[in-house]
Length: 82
Image (cartoon, rainbow, N blue to C red; front, side, top):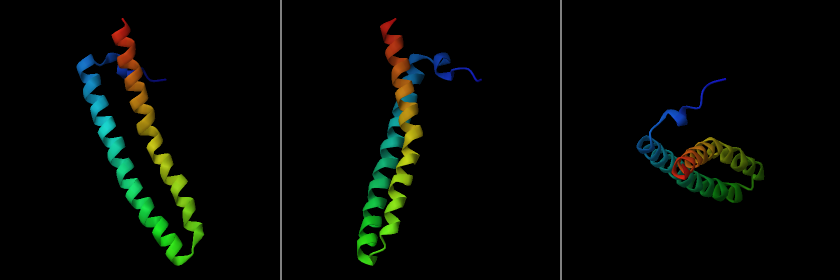
């Protein structure tokens, strides 16, 4: 089992990591909204409703970014409490 790498970072490094993760997650989310909008347009235009199954599968790719961001936020919160 690997060590918790967040506990080894300084508070400034944690804020930098938080900003990076937040930007990447928001950027990926915006790109996905645009891609899903185009996909929905194509689904209704071609009447091929099987393509809708791509949307939930695509949302799964956001989960690692959200989990990492919540871990960084909890580490920052625990350090502020001390």
